[in-house]
Amino acid sequence: RRHEASRNGTRIDLTATEFKLLRTFVRHRGEALSIARLLEEAWPGVFLTDRVIYTHVSNLRQKIEEEPSRPALIIGVRGVGYRFDG
Image (cartoon, rainbow, N blue to C red; front, side):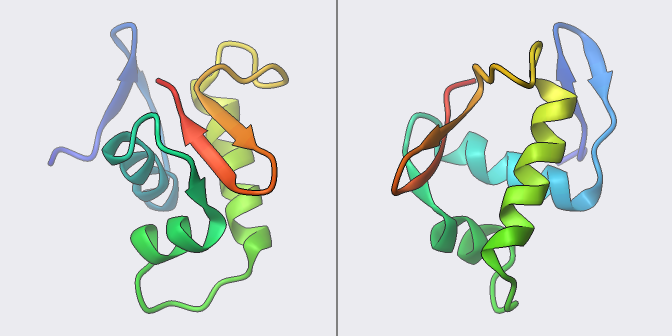
């Protein structure tokens, strides 16, 4: 509701788009979400390419992961999409 995110008590500055994506991941924690499902949930009725998701997931990882090159929160699921394990 407040459109704020934090990790270990430290506020994380997210764009509105990154926040929508994170909110979608949190709502479906532990569930593998396809790119189509992420687009549907975070941007209903808007046509975007898969590349948009890849870019925003990468940007989000840079902000929330301790080691973005070795993600532990947003996990890529080969052939499906992504899963949030945070």
